[in-house]
Image 1: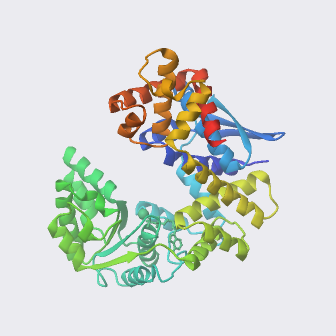
Image 2: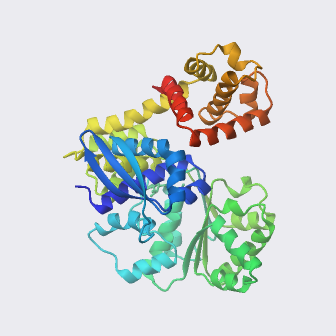
Image 3: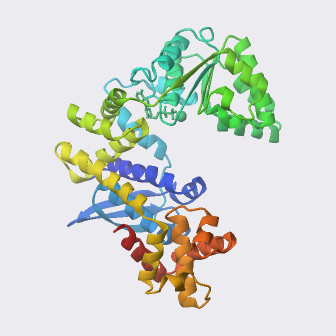
Length: 461
Ligand code: ADP
Ligand code: MG
């Protein structure tokens, strides 16, 4: 029997996947309030019931995102899923906490409530600590700098500026400094936010004439951690306010740590005075992890999630996935697959299957060309290439032509102009119109949906 927290976990995993394939606005409008109400195995299928807060949400999700949800559930559970929707609001909306607490509770040394409460106020995450951070040549400098800063707040390097690609551990390390400082002195005034949060805060302060409140909040901090600081570049009022915040904190002996995807010298539209402040501290880059580090990260993340992995399996995972984010995502899928299929242990075969399936899918996706899509649409509607690419406005040609444009745009992600060129030199607004029309039709008409599914089957099997 699957318990509540497992259901929640599966749905969180799905939402995590869905989140990257739809826009943030769509995600928060349609998906954020949903949850799994029931999950039952029936012979070789899994019936998943999804609770929606209103009939409006239910209808929209059912019509537009049924396929996406089903595909994602199939992938996460490793089984064929049937999805049903019902109107049933969630009692409490604490998805975020649920996703985090089960892992946390299973830890032996339970952290005490006040400390957790304090971390929350500082917006620090309890797992991003130095203990949970693996060190290798690619991140050794950054790690050492963070340790030095954590032990000498305000006096080692100020600011400390960490930069590097996605998933190299910038947020984790920065958070670890805050955690360490809090652990040593719970009264330390630490605050973690993103460049975007900071921007929103100041914009709101200006709009509501509460800039003084904003200043009281930021300028009195002992440690200010701003993630993805590049976000503030080009925003004059925000940079101005940040400059004064920065000076106030540093003058009072506080510490500033910043992260970015680029070094200060390459952040365009960053005010000169900020750039020179950043350059006066320590700038360290973090490179992508090598194989050994990926093995270590796999072990750390598996332990956190209570997944037991033999060393050869750890190595298989590390050899196939090149970033910490991918490793983490994979372990989440692995755990779901184990739970739902009730595997008694994790074998190399299970892992390879789960890794391989993905790779093959991506491979297959890559190989499809625009020519293949044209052929598949022609086949679906028994048309000739000349007819579909021609000028005739007869409905029998025009609709398949619009579906073709829609697929080139949404499946191959080609630019509008490029799609226009392929379809016999049409204007990009024609393509835009076609994509909109088919998106709408597909949500209203089962026939169109089935046609599209048929074409996709021809393309990707
Ligand atoms: P970034 O901010 O650079 O994009 P994150 O700090 O968000 O990267 O890291 C992505 C994920 O990978 C997090 O779950 C983090 O804990 C993990 N991670 C990255 N590097 C390490 C490491 N050296 N040791 C342990 N976990 C790591
Ligand atoms: Mg980050």
